[in-house]
Image 1: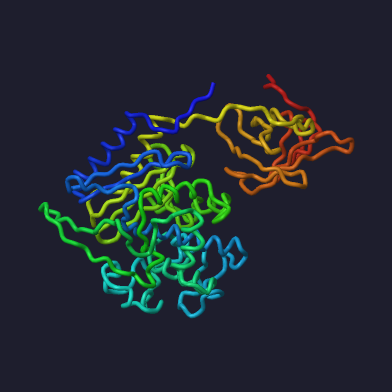
Image 2: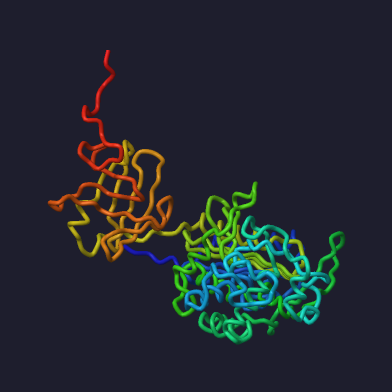
Length: 460
């Protein structure tokens, strides 16, 4: 028996709508729009507005602020994957003369380059980019806040530098590269550097009175790669699907996973949040969310993806402050994940059996600790502790008959089978650790040897 769950249940849809209605009302936002994507499909969108009969929809543009940084990071990873640069390259190698050329591209992507959080005055988000025509005008004379590579310090100028790097390598504008390499391949037709109707206007709501003030909408110039973009709930849900699975037309699944991997240590006391390569990573409600939040005067935005649940949510508001778009997006993910948990794929046997691999499965011992080795798809292996905590990992098969760790303690390490002269298995070697079929098996190649008298009890 099979079932289709393409549409959300009525109770789930009501819970989602209730959440954004509360956010718009209590956050005092002129309007609020949100969307939910599940397994690559937009399955819900909703909105609330202060204007009767004039609510936005999933195709109404809002400014998305720093979610722009994730787009910029994708463009940098594309350059890396094409062999045009390495993430460990110093900036000076590709973009000379910035004054911060000793920092690496990876440090800029992960906000560990030690650069300042903001530009020199005046406030860049409310002034035209023409006031900062050169990188020197963005970085200023005191751009170093912290030692390079030592801590996470969010830097808007750092992503301006990355945008200039993209332009230097591609010999084209950041906006043109973005359009041809991300927006067009992914079908993000309602995402643009400047607003395209229908779009929301940005507003500031007075903190002590229910009155509003229009916010200016400036072209950010060189700062565009840090926060220029306008987009919609529907487009951002499509982008979220890409961030979960990758798309060979834009960036491989492996490179997208790299973006979602922590690149810098979390700040002390902030163990539930860190940063990858152009993506924020948080632990919320017992699940890992990846994505980004954003704000510019007049606008708030949040995009979160739970890869394990196959769910993403986007929340957009046209207010300078008030509702937390990031918190709302996280709540929308939680509502769907808890109300309609993901249906697991059916178990299926492997398409074929390799008996040489099958004989490797079962219990193994590292010293006296027991582990189970399972054969999985594509000749992969999975090693997990039995009966308690321990170091476990999944392993991908290599052409030379070894396996490479994919996660956990043994990520990147090599698992190999060591055989005797007669071809029988002696032991498994994993990062110098010897795994035997019996605990401290006599005659096995256990470092330090095994006592010849063997196991014993307590003598009287």
